[in-house]
Image 1 (spheres, rainbow, N blue to C red):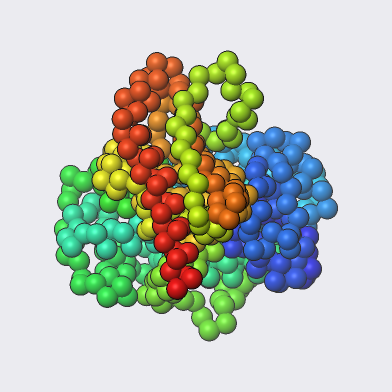
Image 2 (image 1 turned 120 degrees about the horizontal axis):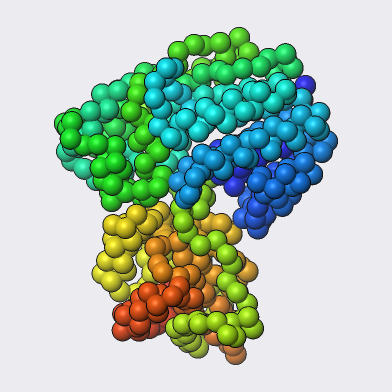
Length: 493
């Protein structure tokens, strides 16, 4: 059953971005569907798969991409998306189910979440169950894998655990901190997903998957603390700390924005453990057995510390964030546009300046006024935005679709142009653009902050920030070029 023709939806996401290359390694021919193929352009495995532009909400796109496919992996989830995400997920699932049946697909595989039977579920978990039901009713043999919280470098669950434990010496927590969960390492999730492509055609149904450890959520936090070399954290369950209040707390303390924290916490309101092990008769555990929780944490920490993170929850766009690309300059005529432009000529080489540009943000900061930058980030978190804590996937290199704190890489022409689109909460649409060109024996550096306001509020927002922008962007241009010159002097000895 090897060498199958496989379609992956959600390849820009956390699990899909890791599954696609493993399917290639397993000998399958892989096609991925992406609304914006540019976000996969710099993926190490992009050249080994067929990338097709399309939208799951457009039936024609789904029918076209399904042609000639044997196995479909449906890995699109709208956690953190604005609007009625449950409705959107159902529409997408129905399009996938209908197109798969019409195209003669032999297998659908869907990744859902562990949940108790017969209890009222959070909107997030209920949506995953509903999507699974649509796919199971498609008439195509379907495997729905229901996983516990996924532990791996870059997973939202892991980062929520990590940052809460790192930051807080004492944890006031909701009552559900005593609930039982069954975490699973991302490597084990990928094992089950890859093997599902080769399962006999008569297998159809829902299967629980989880790691070997059943823990209270408080033990999950303190298990992380042990592996991170931190003291055990006292945890005090408080009956007044509702899921909504807890999500606000997570939003402020961790990089996980409120739009994602709410569904994550909603999935912890019940005991979420494996209730049956029928999966063992269909897909045996990985060689050497399932990964224990603390080993999964240890592996994730090693990846985080080395910066070797394959994929991250950060790949998902922030809820409500503008997604339209920057209009080209000629189209600005007749449109209100505010711009702050700074230029510098430097003795540093274009390569040296570009190295600083591409490594901006995250731990290295913004070469500006840290206090003002931090205050703006805090203000964004308070209104449910992403703030500064998302950081970067890689400290040195960027690719389209990557996050850089509250920005997302919209375009990168390596060595020449970097354009970041704002995902902060602003009354309009904002970008910052960096351009490096050769000039004489050095380089010319150009920096533009661009804002397309929405109504009067957007205009007042920009005008009120003009003095701060002058300080912030002037300092950024001067310091960034200065760092490039200093690094080149150091390299020359």
